[in-house]
Amino acid sequence: MAGPLEGLKLIEMAGIGPCPLAGQLMADLGAEVIVIDRASGGERPNDVANRGKRSVALNLKTPGGVEAALKLIEGADALIEGFRPGVMEKLGLGPETCHARNPGLVYGRMTGWGQEGPWSQMAGHDLNYLSLTGALGMMGRKDQPPTPPLNLVADYGGGTMFLIFGVLSALWERGRSGKGQVIDSAMIDGVSAMTGIFRNLMNAGAWVEERESNMLDGGASYYRCYETSDGEYVSVGCLEPQFFAIMVEKCGFPEDHRKDQTSKATWAARAEEYAKVFKSKTRDQWMEIFEGTDACIAPVLTPSEAEAHPHNVARGAYLDIAGKAQPAPAPRFDRTPWTAPAPATPMGADTDAALAEAGLSAAEIASLREAGALN
Image 1 (cartoon, rainbow, N blue to C red):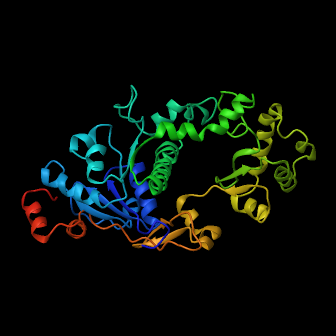
Image 2 (cartoon, rainbow, N blue to C red):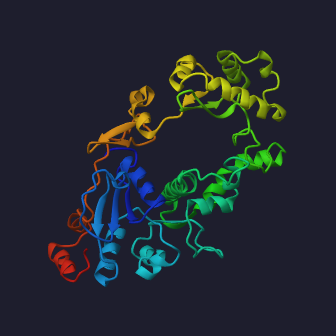
Image 3 (cartoon, one colour):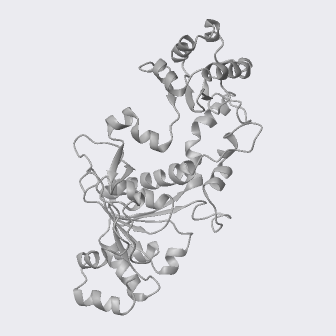
């Protein structure tokens, strides 16, 4: 595949969650990603997380399987894994072993709690990592339990994006030192890093620790969602005074609302007033009213509606891959553009070819298969 990461070779240890997305996003941008899978077979053309990747199925419980993995790692720029701390070491593929074979290897480790600390060996999921950082406690209605924000925040925001950031940063540094290194990427660390703006607001006394009581958590009447007459919703995000003024005008609200927009004392009553007005028209009618304006109002769409929205269509935000809509690679580059990703292949489909490229002969590959090292 073409793209700005063309020429980068990445080994991904098969798993779930943030690691596969990290591999996918880098494959989308041209990296050669080889996934070490545990088994072979199974058509999966609509598996977004594995599109554009190659798959090698190895039995890592055998010496031959571990040696085959190390042969692949020898020629890689980076490796990413999402196991609990110590698992890769038990497999015989820990950082010391890999660096002995490839000193320049960037070794990315992805966990929820981190490689060390009293919780490092405990299981967890996105919701748990969010709760320990204080982020979950800020999400949802004040009179209800915190609202799970899908697993976009800890798994993919604090996990995937920081893992990629770490890998690319270490590769940049390797260009000067010639040495690889280990990256301890923990979801709790990534989420904590993303909450900096809220720490700023707290330190300035502009944020209270109560849900739905602040400007960005649904407390403000001008930053929340409202139901429309057809049971749909619009998102209202007119934070700046000039944008709020457009909303006030288009909705026919009293002009004096502009004078005390940010006064918390007005938010509850205004929210009730705004809710009644927004429920007087359908979602599409409101979008016609706000079309082309800076009111910061958008329709709340379902995933299938998002595929058909004119703006997304114009940008090619979704691609038809194997007959199904998939998100297009992101971001976009003017000089080294990416190409449309290939559908995911069956697990193990590239075992022989990848091992041959790593330097194993046909006889050696056949011997590994006979010994049960290849799955």
